[in-house]
Image (tube, rainbow, N blue to C red):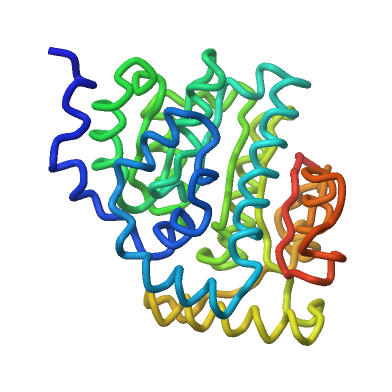
Length: 289
């Protein structure tokens, strides 16, 4: 029997996406994924849990959709550029805090020589079942791992047990993870990731620390984090100063981007974010010191 033949089975729609991931998927729509298979996968998920939050964020944070779309576009652009300039780097990709994201599925379809490891505390077992039903061939190159990202030893043991090779170049993806892990643990995780091989790279999203933000951006950021915390029960959500983080992790920033520079790169002009000070979000490609 063809495993892909039952993709419309009712049980697949019972896979409810967590509030924050569902909110992002609802706001970004088609651009939640970069490939047709990725969009097919997202279309099979129940994102109803994020409906109210998406409506709230859209009404109170008018740049939200553009912000998320630019984040996903920039991440993908950097992944492509890194893999083109160093093909071996794109063959081992570890997605940290993967959740229900389509990133690993997109990459496995895009780069046929790649192997992808997706890691998060929850959801990966159910996600693996769905991906195997939808894309049985590509699923053979994706490993879904449930592990506590704050426990570095167990995380690395789980990766090795699922075939990850520390002696080969690895591209590490940490989209949105900085908000959830304590800065010292996040720094230790990236320090370890970048230590194994000199060619390793990490693509990371940060939120600027409050003292670096313009007053109106600070107000919006505080309100957004407070609402996010009220929805998902994580009162310790915080921004991470990228300069301080790099000092803690020993990483070297090889590229920086903010929403205004992302818009310029994507559209040829800034349409929403007129300057780096218009948003607290920053993204970076990090390399070993």
